[in-house]
Length: 355
Ligand code: COI
Image 1 (tube, protein in one colour):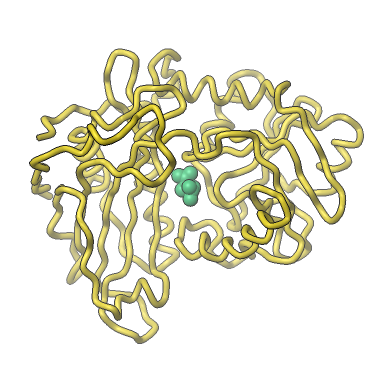
Image 2 (spheres, helix red, strand yellow):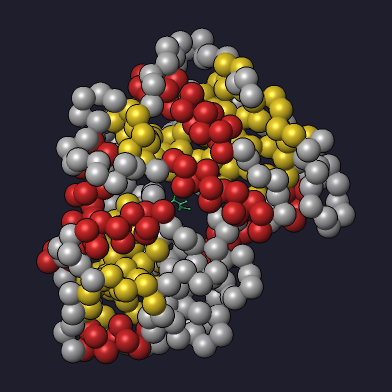
């Protein structure tokens, strides 16, 4: 499909301090928009970021048909902008869409829109390690209708934002014993907006109790660890890297998948399996738990310094973490071109004339 491009007349890039960018607040010059109507994607366009006009009966606002992705563009030391495993994100948004009864986005459209948009706003990619151009592809229902049924029309939008680190210091987690994120048969595996809305109240209570985030446990027994919501979770027990298996209740993280490959490649034994919260506390008691960290596109690697569960607590010295640092160094090195891309994950983006 032809993507119409309308460039901004005046870039806002000079208003931004690329050395000091809070996550999620600063947007680059352009966005991609396409509409789904009568069974096909139409009106594909890149244009200056502008407000949307929506009817108050917009279905997504009422019943939550809305899915998204999180990706990052970085720039190599030689100046080439690049993406990491973009085709994985193209596939995953369609899995989320299927679960939410939404149409698929053709992978070619997703990837071409991404390349053109990032190519046009490539000056917005912060060059420092740990910073990146965060990319937010998302799709939501646009029917003007208040009956509960799948929408017939949708919008697919891609926004890009220069960002610094999501978590700027090690985090503390409260293992949740009252609220749940996802049950078997639910939508936990989909990157659906509602999963994040449902996590806000328990997360707010956790913050009021002095923790940074919630560590979700399974919905049936409150026994097995799932994920953190903003990231997947890894443990290092007796030098073995352990992470909860994806069983339909947790997000199939692409960073999670990359880390598993990197760890195996560096000689670590990696186990994807059920991990009970009791096993984590026993391992800590026996001094076998050496690291706990989160993995996500936004978070990259986020070290955990404390886990609280039902009145007991584990405290960890994050300065001694080696496995988390390895993951960070390899992902950062792949992104900036200083680590050889033997996995074929890095895809260069052609720079387009911006203004
Ligand atoms: C990401 O890591 O990209 C996410 O989507 C998590 C989050 C910031 C909601």
